[in-house]
Amino acid sequence: MVVAFAPLPVSSSSPQARNFRLEARQFAFSPSELFVNPGDILTLELVSTDVVHGIYIDGYDLSVEADPGRTATLTFIADKPGSFRFRCHVTCGAMHPFMIGKLTVGTNNWLYRSIGFSVLAVLGLLLFPRTDPKIKL
Amino acid sequence: MELTRLSLLESALKSRYPQLAVFIVMLVGYIFAIIAGLIGTPVGSSNFSIVFVWIAWWAILILIAVPFFGRGWCAVCPIPLPGEWLQRGAVLGPHGNRWSSRRRGTDADSVLLDRRRRTETKWLNLRVPKMFRNIWLQNISFLLLALFSSVLLTTPNITGIVLAAMLFAAVGLSMVFERRAFCRYLCPVGGFIGLYSQTAPIELRIKDKQVCVKCKDKPCYHGSSAGYGCPWDVFPGGLTRNTYCGLCMECIRTCPHDNIAVNLRPFSADLAKPSARMDEAFKAFIMLGSAMIYAGVLLGPWGMFKDAAYNVGTTAWFIYAIIFLTIIFGVLPGLFTLGLLQTKGAASLKQRFASLSTALIPLGLMFWVAFSLSFVLTNASYILAALSDPLGLGWNLFDTANIAWQPMLTSVLAPAQTLALVVGLIWSARTAQKSANEAGVSPFTIIIYCLIATSVMLWLLL
Ligand code: SF4
Ligand code: SF4
Ligand code: SF4
Ligand SMILES: [Cu+2]
Image 1: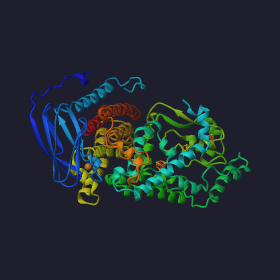
Image 2 (image 1 turned 135 degrees about the vertical axis):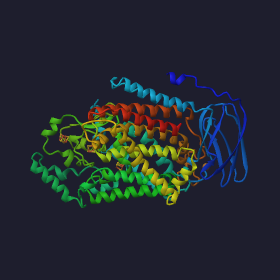
Image 3 (image 1 turned 30 degrees about the horizontal axis):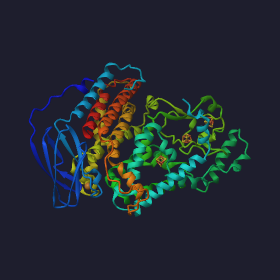
Image 4 (image 1 turned 90 degrees about the vertical axis):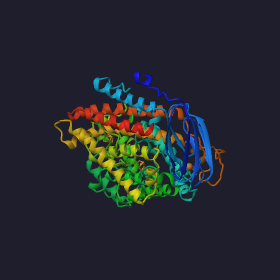
């Protein structure tokens, strides 16, 4: 429980405007990993180098499409911290469902908490190995 | 709890008609998937074969069927049916009067019966050679598909060909060998369903051992006028694990003493008695490793790996294949062995390796659940669209063809994945404690191994 609710150190940098030029090709984005701070104003310029591609950001539920050679722009405030996949949402070929990148806003707290949970669970099992076998959680 | 006490369920399982009805639906769906794959649109996400096999079927298999019903899928799987029907020369049961004149009772009779059954069949009906009577062929067939999976998962043509090939292979093996040789020894899916079915809360077992001891004919294995001998080549009277029982329900029909039950039981009851087979131990590593590799390659942000996995035949793909196999046969079992070396016990290293790898079974299952949750929820919206336009020809049967792609349940995805992985970790740690106890060693290093693997998987998925 402590792991779940303990306040994690907050990064103190003040919000900035940030520009990323994202090149999309079959079947990858470049750069494919973006790191920003919470509150940053993000502008993504999506440029496609082959066929029509899109970008959809999980969690933010935002998207934009870019025709080949044209730049499409998506501006938003990265106000949700955590790690989100972004993916192409315009069918662009075979591996389209796996055309994925990652946007990390601040620290990926959920990951660290999940690992914390795992460690605690294992510690608990090692310290009290003889719990009732029916209690799995 | 014995489910077959429910008389409605029991009669539904004993009768061949409900099963046949499901079989026919499945077989029609399967053949349609082959056709759609071969003649439908080459765009995977709008083709019935890709969407129904790799999204819908896969979701049901790994999220529901295997965890809760073990080999439940095999009970309704269409792949072995044409072969089995040909082999038997019948779609329903044996022709009653062929046997009914025979008096049951003596051993000589049953041998005669068995021999007659063997000679009567038109086909070769050979026994599978001993060296193949393990799951190494299944390990290999799974790995072959796994190495081509990026193409297989996304190309309708290839999916159609692979589905058809499985059907034909099953028919061919039924002609040459007795019973379901394809299911037991070759099916790439059957191997891991069997491994993970040990965790399921359902089992088919005998009710009373003494009844079997006294039972002379053993029609559950040899067959009788009421039905066929176990198609999966197991002796139902000796079942202790789910791994190789395909839940085909034949023995419920053939046992004259009504001695077969389907039971509800605690999860993973089979893992309390670890098997000591190397083929199964490596299956656990293959499945654990593939789940991690897929999570990284398919769902990760690294385009380079995706290119390598997709461009089969290129140098990059060969390197990918080598890395894939090295992780599965080198890194994962290697680190596991290193962990085992820290333990001291009476059992040989090989025995400890085989029995402690049991701990990886719940872990691997939950890795697959966590991986599939992400893959399935993001792509589930294709199912409705493909239902209306299965071949991608612009049909609109149910007015759902134009449903836009939209990931589902995005807000619960990460919590659900964490839950699955942490539950898997606890489950495997408890399994490790039990099997370590059995082998007389300390489970500590194996639990740490599971913790590290879980952390890597969390990092890949979250
Ligand atoms: S082993 Fe394979 S072919 Fe046989 S029933 Fe199971 S899934 Fe189907
Ligand atoms: S399960 Fe039935 S048929 Fe098979 S040995 Fe036992 S009593 Fe005989
Ligand atoms: S005959 Fe019985 S033991 Fe054999 S596979 Fe079918 S259900 Fe399982
Ligand atoms: Cu795309």
